[in-house]
Image (cartoon, rainbow, N blue to C red; front, side):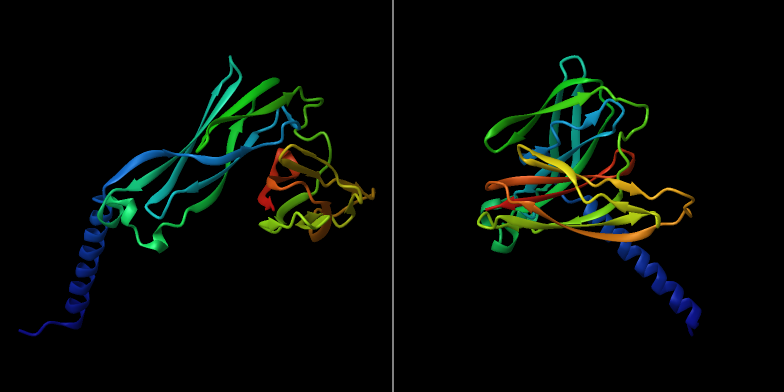
Length: 257
């Protein structure tokens, strides 16, 4: 019996669909368990958020090895006690090679670092304690929410910062280190030469403000690149926090050693 080309293609399609379905079923059958993993730290500017801001936390974490897959970062806010609990979860593969982590191949034993930006939402005015689990136990940091001075989200006109570049490791022996900002500006606006900002504990805050030239301006945007030199802080782990428009921010983690 002759089989037409169309029939052959049809049968090949069915075979492919069957293979995909079986592969998907195999993935579903992988034994997994949900576990909480410790983090290196949780970062946020201690000062700078108002009660009309969408508060954001940055989680600096790692997965023990390749058998773990990062899932939800859970944030629980107790508004009465003004405590914020941050918990990082992952799925652990319990099948095949991952059944015994002591016998993993060397390439799978490498810890996998990650950074997560977590939206907490608006918080009422007050002093909050952020708690998180590390290998050294539960640690805390403080977060101060101030009363907004205006109904606007931002008290200042910030540039639209889209990205920031900094070395992942900065030498503690160098007096300064380089930061590169990119983003967008109106064609009749500029960036203030003075980047208002501060370093508070382990967070470096930069506030790039817009200088308006006045007059009529077309509603278009142009790219900008800004190179900045900052004083190198003491050895440690830091968050570089760049404020942008509408209460948003661009964050990067780096290490000084």
